[in-house]
Image (cartoon, rainbow, N blue to C red; front, side, top):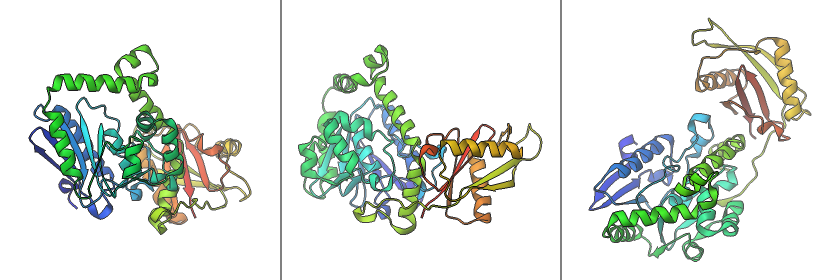
Length: 386
């Protein structure tokens, strides 16, 4: 599908309509659609003729979350996957929800001020079954909206929530008959747009600031609602730490449908021998240098990759004198692509590669499927799922 048709942006009177258009994928968001969504929300903010945004999905579903085919190959650059989720809008927005609004799709709905939900719609943190964290505002906005206890019920269980229950807990503002979410949301948006906007926006901003009053890290934060932004940043940092589990669960879904249709199965982790790969940069220090696979070391299958064995791996790599203090000018994305290519050639394509600054929190887990090593200041994590 061409990029220009992934998202439909139209204006009706004072209403700015944004329509997700991947119906064959239940409007799940890939990186291209995320960029388009972000641009559309920024366009709405700048458009002086538009007062209220209406977000909806084409083809019977609002949004089923982030595209797990891309989540299975996460790297640092692909995080913040849902596009506009960390924006702080200055104008009102309404979500028109039909079908599924789950996982990252629920987080997009939470980004909006109001939610119009069709009677047969389903909401929920369905990403729980895959081990994919909420990093698009779900853990921040949901407790502020419906309270901590109810929010944790949804976050920890990943259970589906129907329209009636969503309305009872304050997650849905209006429930409408099936097939009428968009027209009901537009009517609500037109009603809001008919009022004097300066006053409406000021009161809205004050209410948002009050809702996140305790989120700030300073008096200034609490005064201007930047506390919300700081909590969103903290949520993202926490999600980064479980990225390996997220990619493993996503890969299981893509490969064999694990977790599809509500089956909350635990990801199966292989108990396999750990391998240490050492890569040496070639060429001069002041140029982008290709990497060369130079060494390999094995650990017994009974050895878990925890923090202590990570230090052991690091010491082994230093003794080989092939990784120590390497000056890498190549981008982490290029390094990841190279390692994945070389590793697939040498072993098999079921390994996943993440390149980042620090994966220390991952290796405290007692699992047997990680490969973890350093290349200068770059940390590299390879992992395998069953």
